[in-house]
Length: 264
Image (tube, rainbow, N blue to C red; front, side, top):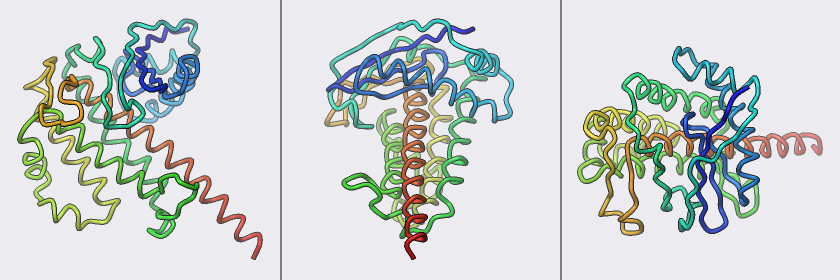
């Protein structure tokens, strides 16, 4: 049986729980207790997915322990008062665990996770046409394409937390101009932005290690603190959240298609 250590943050009635030693495992809810219940479920889902990746490090043993059962959950840090926490680009907490240096082997493992996540995403959406992805499947809710756009736009936001000149380095890394990137299909953009983002993370990892930085050009939250570990954590969490949302939208789309075929 295993112990799960979590950090909690709250803002505007939204709660996030983050596993401190299991980067990328998280939950979002609208009460503290629901966030804790949800992360206990997510740790099993995330463990199963990670074990499908070919790797051999401390996470493999952790995954197996979490799947065997969790007998204790401890809240390490709890921070409150963040505005627009439910918004992916809203201000969020910098926890003590975010300041810890990432060993090089674990950094490479996190890059592997970041590169593997789009594989699952593409398996979910590739079979659907542009018209199907642009359908409003739930009244007033984003479409599948809206969610895909949010993935790569937010990834650019995250890497730009490192300061001036990052955007220019990003386009140098992908060997394209902004206009050329915008000319790609939406799915191609998701893949290309991921390539550039991982190149930026690799470039800044040796420079930042455990340094805390701010982006003064962020007009909304110029005092928000970032580290490379926080960027990676947010990166993985955000894509997992968007992928789950897209999966739910695809289920609605399939239900609507099945219903349409029945009535014909």
